[in-house]
Length: 424
Image 1 (cartoon, one colour):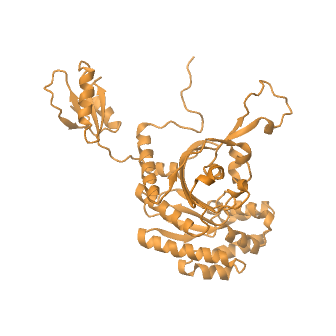
Image 2 (cartoon, rainbow, N blue to C red):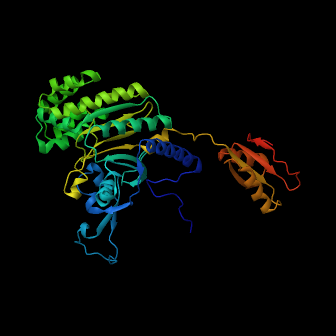
Image 3 (tube, rainbow, N blue to C red):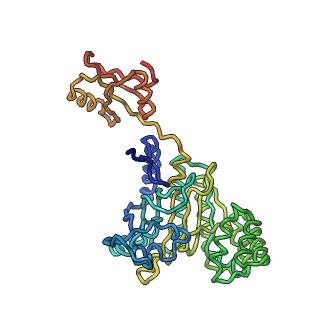
């Protein structure tokens, strides 16, 4: 019987040319983050289900791949609760595992701890273009730093990483969860209903104010709430950085001074970063971000030609402390690794050489010749001659090779290097 060789729905295989792009992106990001002092860690794919479903993951908690307990009988009673069958799940992001990691290893780590993670995560999404059930995330986090140094450094390091990868002309959009709470309160949204209000507001760029108003109406918010929120948001649109704090104070008198001070510090740092590195930024009063664990600044990075953001993050001071019994300040930035890879369709050029050898050349000679050609660190791969010569050269060119050497059994031992053009 023929077996279906396609990957599981919502996942994909990656060919060598695709992996070459991914390796280039990862190595570049790793090098930049390393220069800023971030150290790479690894966490398991599996986490305890109670940690993953603790109420801090927002909509992602509805998409957890749950794992059955070991040793379950083949038949389960019809009225058995799901909680009795499941004890673990596949991680849906890298922040929740980092919180557990820090709680476990806190005594062994410096303060502040600069963490870098890269690895697969899983969400039970409905598969569609650009959305996968398994994909990779790339995160940096600073744990233990209560001041705005964390936000400013994370933004600078990440925009520099994106620039080095090849994404230029990026724009940083910032907001603050405390600002959003003040906005909702002044618009007449009670504290217990603000999460639903934020979820709807986050769709503004997709459905416009008419769509937001319609959904808020279904959630029980009247037109006066929508009008009050809209007036304040539009009053904050395209505010120059040097006037941001004064404008916020006028539009939202209830906004605490601590929030204004933090935004003033961040605005000054972003202006410096922009001067040094050509990064633009703006305050976005409609930026929400879906995770429930954010407590302060939130930010995203937009790039020309990209649908949606290519990176995002924020401050989450309460998440780690939930398991320690004491608050630990933390701030993180996640790069949209898959989205960036899709924007960079071609791998960087590499000097890869194919050693084409005739079938009657002794194996020891092939290996010795390849060893000689690799002097200086060049990538060389022996490939046996097969089929039509021109067709084989085209296959090598498609595989990323730039040149070849033909090792003949009857040759004089010379190693003439020839570029790959698909002809003899």
